[in-house]
Each structure stands twice: as structure tokens, then as C-alpha cells.
Image: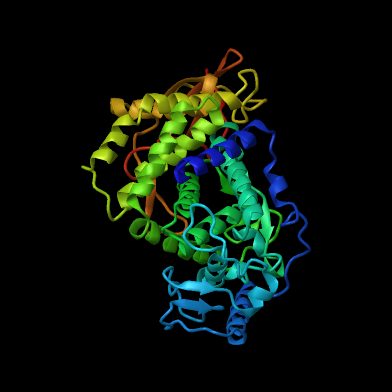
Length: 462
């Protein structure tokens, strides 16, 4: 069995197991932040500076640091500047890591990887520039955010599948917030999705030519790209304060941005284009052949993200390539829509009141006139509204047809997509309702989604 086929089978089994169970994502984070012990008394800035100082002190204590070595082997933490991590070097953990980490010297190479477990751990130790909140990697609080052994690999995969499922379902049953937090040093917290985002991105940065690390990078990338078009949000009062009063590290967003930039750059320039294309082919094939609604939709999203967001950014991309053209030709929008609808139907009970239709509605309102748009845009809006409202859907009307830009939180000058306002006409228990909501699409004019602002509810129609 080739590597892609074997890894894909393992992941599929995990998806089916997660999808079939009544899985609580909170269980993944027991002990990581459920019972935080009070707020910190120092400022966030002081804590970040303290962590930087500790990282530098660890360097001074480690031995054998030689970035100019002919062998390319580097031992211990690095004091070099941001962006200095070099995946080509064979990093090995320093003395402190070896004392705390039983696998620091492991020469085992997992299937689908090129580097040994010990070399991966050595690489982690040298990523402090953009992972300072999770350093040293072997500390009790920090080890949850790295792939260190097979147990942690399975735990992180389950965390990813459970949280991604919440994100996938957020447009349907409106679980709009991720209110699970992991605890890091000094009582500060980070969103629970950092468990797999840091783990998958750093593992890929450490071994960017490997088949397995590339797949997990693609998982993280799909989740992040889907975030902008889902109803999924962090339970925050502001950028750095959770709804229950805890705080995020001051450098959280810059560290996440730098880490993602490192991973994206390697995926665009170092990863095998053929391997990336192979994963896209496999995930579309799996999506079209699956009977389980969750497994099919999950794999469809992975395949679509690789096709739309990853392959076109690769240095070796050629839209005239025969293999790529065959994949594009095989992608079936009709099948994709049916897969999406099957997933929606698996969540929607036609007799269950959706949370956007109030139990005690206000006075009825008149049907809006709306405006006409192109047939293609109208069709996309109808598909998105049907996916959102399910069996309650009747029709969708454009409010004014004007689109405005959606900007990235991490990169304010980067355009993520566009949004316009629409009215969804729905029917529940024989009565008609109207919901004013947002309709988004990506920068290429694809991937239409309904985005309902928190608190928006439908009104009865006259």
C-alpha cells in the first residue's frame, strides 16, 4: 500500500469514528484551560519579555551550537533572528531537552516523513522565533501543542477533526463561538485550535518535503481558509480578552502570522507539487465515493482548498498541465452541492425551530423589493441560502447588490473576499419569515456562504 493510500485510509477511519460518535470537543481540552487559576498580575508585555529572556538563557546553557558546521547539524536552541530557521539543517535537541524528552535522541523515522523523531524535536527547539508561547516544547504546559509521539499525533488529529466539525456545522446549527481555551505560561490562554494549528504547521516547517507533514499542513490550511467564510468565531470580548475574563499573550497574533507565513512559503516553494496534486485527487475521489455525510463533506473541503488555494500558489503550477486539467474537469459542482446538502440534512430536523427564527417574533414586515443580479450570482446565492436554511428555505433576494471587501484580521491589507446583503425567505410551521443576512464569496468570486451576524433573527412576513 503506498503512503498516500495508507495515510488516507487511517485518516478516513478517524473521521468516521469521530463523525459517528456523539463527540464533545471539550473533552480534548480537559486540563488545558477548563479551570484556570485566576488572572495574571503582571502585564502581558512583561510576560512575553520574560519568555524571550528564558529562551536566550537556555541557549547559553546548551552546548554544541554550530550553525556553520560542515555537517549541517545544530544542537540546542538558537539565538538567531526571526526567519532564521532552516529546514535543511539537521537540528538535534540540546542537553536540557534531552534530559526532559525521552524521544530527543530517537532515530526512528515515521512513515511518510524524511526526518527522524529526534530531528523533528530538535527543529521544534529552534523555532522559538515564532513559537515562543509554546517553548520549551517539552514543558508540561507546552507539549500539548506539538506532535511529539504517536499518542500526541492521534490526540491532535482527534482535536482537529472535532473542532473542524464544529466549524463545518457552524453555518447550520450556529455554534458561532469556540469557547475552549488552552493554558500557557503565567495563566494566559490561547484558542484551543492552536493545539493542531501549531502542531501541524511546525511539523511541516520542520520536514517540508515529507508526504505526511504536507497533508497535515493542508488540514490546517483548509481550516484557516474556511474560518473567514464560516460562522465560527472565538469567544472574545476584544482581541486579547476572553468572554470569561482571561487574556491572550500580547504576541499571539504576530506569532501565529509568522508561523503561518513560514509554512505557506515552504508549501509554495519546497513541497512536491505532484504530491500536493495527488492529495487533491485522492480527497475528491474519497468525497465522491463516501456514504457518510460528514466524511464526504470533510474530504470535499480539503480537496477544494488544495485545488483553489494551494496548487495555484505553488511555484510549479501550470494551468495547462494535463493532470491538473483532468482534475479540474473531474470536479463536479452538482456532486459537491449534493454532498454539502447531505451534511446539512444530517444536522437539520425539519420539526426543530432554528435559532434564527425567534419563539416570540415581533410585528410582521413587508416583503422587500430587492434588486436583480446576474443569473450566475443568483444561482450561487440560492445554493448558499439553501445550505444555510435547509428545509426551511423558500427564496433569496438581494438587498442592493453592492459588494464590499472583507479584510484579514492578521493581515489588514489582505483582501479575503467580498460580502453583500441578502434576504432569506423561509417557512416554519406554515408561517413565512425573512432574515436579513450577509452573503460572502472568496477573492476569486467562488465559495459563496451565508454569514449571519450574531444576534440577527428572522422576522415574520406580512
